[in-house]
Amino acid sequence: MEYKELHRWDVSASEAIQIQNSLRSEVRMEKLTKEIKYIAGADISFEKFSNVVYAGFVVIKVKTLKVVASSSVITEAKFPYIPGLFSFRELPPLLEAWKKLEVEPDVVVLDGQGIAHPRRFGIASHMGLLIDRPTIGCAKSILVGKYHDLAPTAGSSAPLKDKGEQIGVALRTKNKVNPVFVSVGHLIDLEDAVKVIMSTVSNYRIPAPTREAHLLVNWLRTQSGAGKVVDDEEE
Image 1 (cartoon, one colour):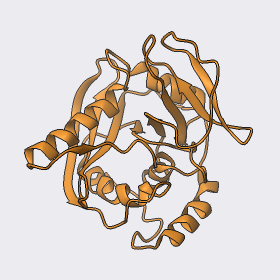
Image 2 (cartoon, one colour):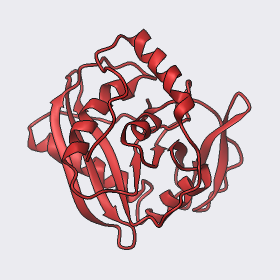
Image 3 (cartoon, one colour):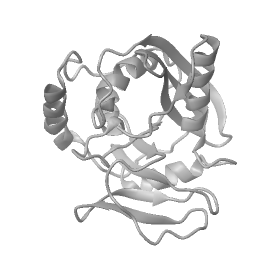
């Protein structure tokens, strides 16, 4: 799978922030225009206090939620661990895995934020611009924003707002479990993003694409003899 080269990756933190600020205006929110048959989930795992990272994609078929393809890499992160700039640490490894993916997904879901980010440019938005296809951020925790009045039943949602602007939704995927936080990455609107996520929920709180990707990279890390898993829930 191909992707665009939009900027250098060997940058300082201040340069990374400038890149985020310059690219966020290119993010587009729009309705999906074709049937979604295949959805990819992306995730990354790493050993605490190590720059070795395990990155991967898993593609599922929407109708069956069965895995039809996957790809992964073990490599070294070049960018430091800085909240708000995780995409500069995680995307180079993920792009290596993306190049190896053999089934083309219609939508990509990332374990992290889209526009629900202080600069409205989280990892899902960054990835969307690079691969030029619809992307969704589906995070397990909030990076920025607040929500209220979320009903306890599956499918309930509440606006996630920051400074008066809706940047995503808190979405209850299962009855009486903690919500996930869905935001637009690129080339999709929030309504369709929520529909995509709910279409891939089965027996778990986390949607199937990112759950399968999570299992893949943690299996890869375990097979490599690494230590305790660290889950990135924010970027």
